[in-house]
Image (cartoon, rainbow, N blue to C red; front, side):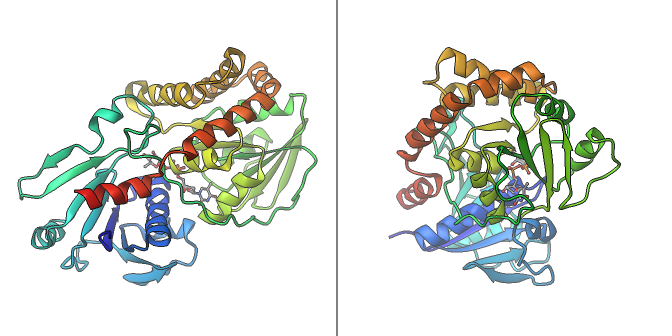
Length: 359
Ligand code: TRH
């Protein structure tokens, strides 16, 4: 029997990953584990981009069986849950911590996903706090000794496309603005295979517009260059974004949540890790590639690695894109078998529930 009431605290630091991960976790705890979840979010506007039915005027509201509460200084923090998830070391309000003491709540700090080996040593480690509470570190990861990978998939909603089934390779593009976007588009335009590229409307769209010699691009617009066709999509709901990943043959993803969804979409993907100091993101990337594609042949691994390294280091050449496509069938098979292996392990939410029950 598990503890039935959980609170998740989510601070939107930048981008969409903080709320992306927390919203998915909240839904999986609720749907699969029948836990009553309250999700505290400090920035409802960002949350609304992923959850379009969210009402910005309400301090608290129920969506898909989850209570979403606006986290601000004057919110009512008097009722602490049995289990409290602090996402990505976002900090918990002092009055809420008092309520946790009175309620003997469990305190879990959910960390970022990484395939690096040190994660196993820090996963589940307790950190006693001055106020008598114990905060536990929970590290998601790809091995049995880590916290697992979040695996809540929506029944994907297919976005509305202008060209639902182009007779070409379908690609989705979601990346950070410093990625070599123009070089990638150029490599595709000059490549051998025709590619239809769906791009949801984010801050990178102006780079795409510049590539086509325009000041901006509108949602719904379709532009072409050589072998490349670009279709601009609106920023999608999270469920529709999953639908886009399922629809495409190759997905360019970033950060944490879209990366995980690309893995579960079971299609070849190129992951751009969140930029960190001292090239820590490259170490994270290398650890993941080594772990995920461990059984790939040298040739296939090298094509995957070169593509990722160039994408992360801001320079893509036509040769690397060609080499990647030449290995495409092998990359597909490797991705599918790595996906299957990962599915054999318990997912993050299930492991988290067991961990909290056993505390
Ligand atoms: O937005 P991100 O770059 O988030 C990042 C990372 O999580 C990073 O690790 C963290 O440090 C930083 O935030 C604070 O990328 P991520 O994690 O892929 O999150 C994007 C979310 O947005 C994901 O849930 C998918 C969703 N999404 C949509 O719902 N619709 C869309 O159209 C697109 C492009 C994305």
